[in-house]
Image 1: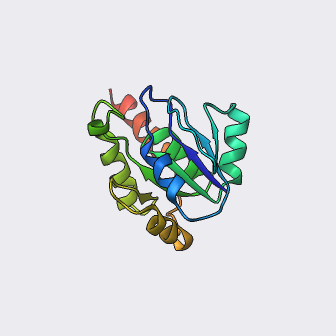
Image 2 (image 1 turned 90 degrees about the vertical axis):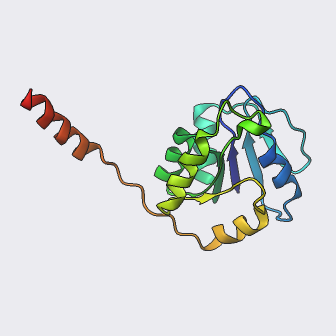
Length: 155
């Protein structure tokens, strides 16, 4: 199963869904679309999922396709999923600016996920996803807390 999360941005983001509609694969696709309105014969589209339903879809997914928001990316990586992230772009009215490009490129550059840029072929990305082994996400929390404590003590 493929789980798609388009985030909670109050702007439509149909590019992902239009491309997945044309994808020749036959795997089940569950979508949390948020503000994006899209009719599909092949995808199961929900405006929003409950936190429990979201967690179940995420955990059941073989591949997670999402927008370039850090929250969704981190949830998918912590769940150990192969992630394909597509940044929302200002030129399509999907966001106010293109900051998600930097987020996605940074994660992709460190081998955490596959980046889906404007014009990329979803079939090729799905093929890459078959053999992609994402880098394991590791928390830097303990190191951060130690350094923060040292800083506070030095004041």
